[in-house]
Length: 294
Image 1 (cartoon, rainbow, N blue to C red):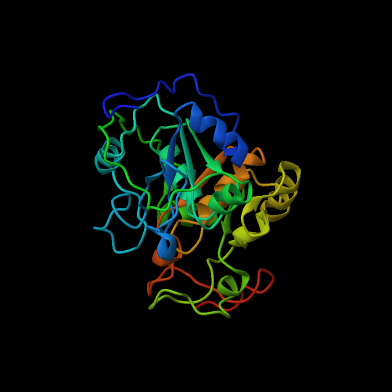
Image 2: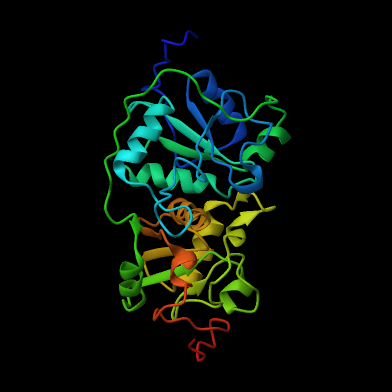
């Protein structure tokens, strides 16, 4: 393919927000755009699915003017970043990460929040791709091709702030689900980011993101996901998701979407914001003991 020619992906169809490794192999032949959204130690890893471009959540695809990590960038910054990565509005996108399903769901949710629906997550991520016997390249994700024409069209309500979460906590029709580990939720394990209080929001429900996955990387079947979310949400249909910095909250958003929920929002600041010393209420203990305000 020449540097000035791009495949027509308008006919490429996704059957849902999740694709398996074999399906991705076929989609690559149809010209799907593939993003590596790995973060932390996996960012810039020397192995990638061939042709993968970097969806850099630790770089250009976060707002670094914010005081908390992984803040959603504004529409102008997001548009520029996606155009620089060669994305057009008519393209089809699949996102993966090197851990399984961890930060890839964040990229998926961000694209949807910016009005782009032709996107899915690779179930099981790079480990599943390798396990299925598909090829890899010994090079980091990169892109130096022509610019795209993508334009962000923000959808209000998919990414929300602390005030919206405070309102949700007081709303009997809504529930806030916390994707951190049970020990961090309870305040018995230290937060990985310095200066944060331990515990959780009063009324928030613990649902560690690993509970909706099998083998730490593959999403559970739809019927199992529905059971998990019905139990956690207690019949409520308005679901808000929080975590440490707005990343694994999106894994819950992906799981809830697969389970058939539609009224969903991710708290962008998550515990990196709420847990800062402030007058925002924090309690410790498990879900049955929220009597210890801090």
